Structures are given as C-alpha cells and as structure tokens.
Length: 227
Image 1: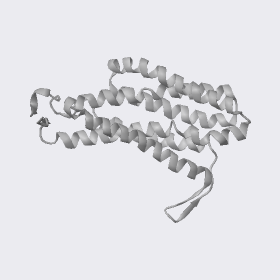
Image 2 (image 1 turned 60 degrees about the vertical axis):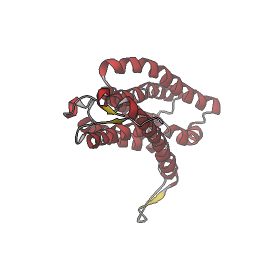
Image 3 (image 1 turned 90 degrees about the horizontal axis):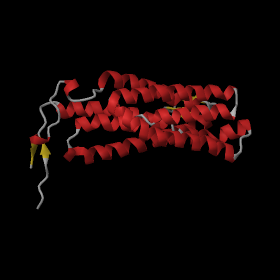
Image 4 (image 1 turned 135 degrees about the vertical axis):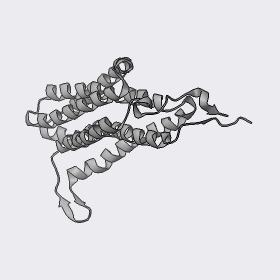
C-alpha cells in the first residue's frame, strides 16, 4: 500500500497560501472574462459593421495565434521577471486593449479590431506562465495535483462569469430584483470586464506574494515531507 505524503508547513502557512492563491486565481479568472467576451459580442459587431463570417473569423484567429506564440515567449520571459510581475503586465495590457476595443467601435475599422485583439492575445499569454510560476513556489510537488485542480476551476469560472453576465448585458436584466438595467451596447462587454480585471489586479498587487519568503515564511522544502 502506498502511503500519502504530507507536507509539514509552518503555522499560518496554509492560510497565507490560500489568501495568496485567491487573488492570483481571481486575476486569472478575470483574464478569461476579457478573452471570451468577444464570442458574445461577435454577432453584434458583425451586424453593426457588416463584417462577414470570414472577417470575424480573422479577428479570432489573429488573437489565438498571438496568444499561442506569446505562451512560448512569455514563458521564457516570466522565468526572468517573475510570475507576479508577468501577471500584472498581462493585466495592464488586457485592460488597456479591452478599453481600446470598445472605443474602436466608434471607428468601425476591421484592421483596427484585428490589431487590438492581436495585441490583447499576446498580452493575455502572460497570465498562465505567471500563475504557474507563483504557485510553483507555494506548492510542494506532492501538492501540485491540488493546484492543477484549482487552476482548471478558475479557467471555467471565468468562462461561466462572462457567459452568464455577457448576454444579460446585451439583453437587459433586473439587478437584485430591484433595478432594471436596460440593454447595453456591445462595447460594454469589453469595458466592464476591463474594470473587473483592474480591481482584482490592484488587490493582487498588494496582497499576493511571489514566494513564501516574501510573506515571511521559509521556502517550501521537499525534505519536510512526512510519508
């Protein structure tokens, strides 16, 4: 029978790690609200500017290609600058690009949408390497299955949030059963997630730490594992 390895952490460590992870995870979740908003706004953008499916597909492909290339480049860069800084660069970038994408609605130029969304795809690719870099320092090898589970949850939480509230913003909804919010222009699908990401990024910048040492704890040591 194979025993379960238990890592002996100092008092207060797990609580501090949970706090650290909460804001790192929420920031990554907010990245997804800034990414999957386009799928919800897709038809409204197409109808407003007369873009065909091929043109809309080009915007999506450009963002995905930039994101894929960025994962490789930014993974290497994150090892040099640190995970927290990488995530905050990504947050600042995607906030800026989502705001600009909304404002680009006043111009209605396909090339401008392509450029903004492509840059956004690249900047968002700082998110995953940054989060993995931070949490690798906070979780022992025997605990990283737990981290992977939380990682997957945060991804799907971001999708759930934007897929639930995005259509409501376009259709109108009753807030807390008291206030009716009328249908909003599709640009708000980019501005509201940008605002959410900004708030979470500020909180993460002040609360989350790159390593246990930065929070006053010793580094996670595999030698302190009890079988």
